[in-house]
Amino acid sequence: MHGVSNLKNKISLIKNNKTNKNDIIRILGPLPVIDKKDNRWAYFEVRETKTKYGKKEVYVNDYIEIYFDKYGIVKKFEFFDLNSMNDIKFAKEKTRSLGVKDTFAKNLLSSTRQRMKNARKKFQKKN
Image (cartoon, rainbow, N blue to C red; front, side, top):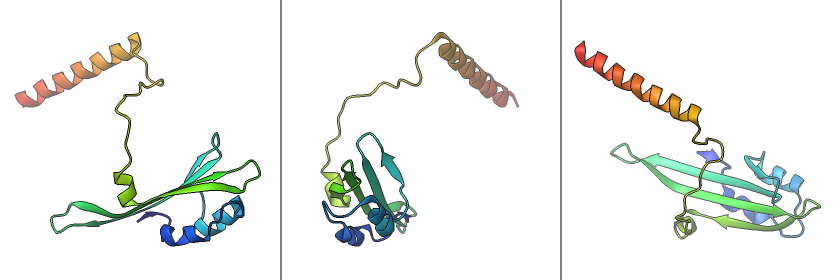
């Protein structure tokens, strides 16, 4: 199990325009995910089991996003379970990473790494 146990039952204690951040911490525990820009907190619960063939199967996948106003009071919250997550449509567009750019140094290191892998394969074949 990962995240908060019994998340689906605990969210019944959250009330819009009444519950504050301290109440959320008391109800759901410490924060796994915080988005300070949107003043949003996220909690999740994932439970999985192994099938008779050893494959992992998720049977509980609950996720809640809680939005706060500027005073720390719950403005709204959205709950997603395993069934509703299957209905979410994701964008097909690809996002280009800003952290790793195609620079000369990156290309040089990549080609050097590839040459080392090829040399290692040749060496292993000889022995």
